[in-house]
Each structure stands twice: as structure tokens, then as C-alpha cells.
Length: 111
Image (tube, rainbow, N blue to C red; front, side):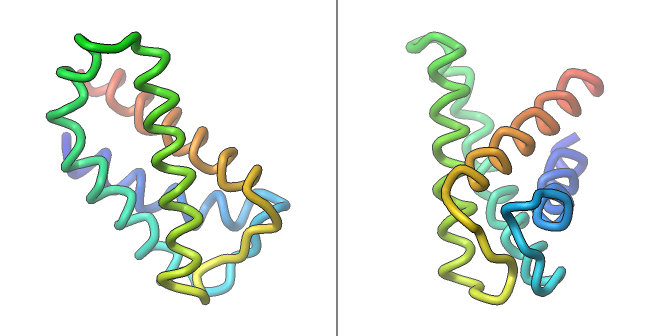
């Protein structure tokens, strides 16, 4: 289950970079490294999420994860400058939303 979510996250970043008009895919392997960065962070944060859901409203927790993903998508362009290029931060937000929707759909389908 953890590996499926991780694999979906790794693949979602290059797919978004290829499909979205505001992102330009440069090297697919480095885009997959960026996806792996997001996957590792979410694998670490996954056990903490139920605790956060008890303390905060689920909508707020979802917004926090989208904000974190947006930051990580932007950070990946600084760590691996040849992975993809963003036109502006709105495309990072769209990518973060797509990644979270895919991750939640996989979580819901496999539980």
C-alpha cells in the first residue's frame, strides 16, 4: 500500500510536467527524483496525519498538505534545475492539487 502511493507520487510529477501547459518537462529522471522527494516526505508524514485530523478540520489539513506539496514542487526546481520549469507558482499549486487527488484516490481505492 505504501509502495503504491509512493509510486503514484513519483510518476505524478513527470506526468504533470508533461501534461500541464505551465510546466516544461526537461529531464524525466530528474522529474522522477522530484516525485520521489514528495513521496518520501508524505511517507514520513502519513502516520502524523491522523493526529493532525483530530486537532484540525480535515479541510485545513488538506490545505496544509497542498501548501507543502506546492513548496516541494518549487523546491525541486532549485535542487534539480534540469527536471522541469515552472511558468509561475500557480502551476505548482495545480500540480500539488493533482498529486493530492491522485494520492487520496489511491488511498480510498485500496482501503
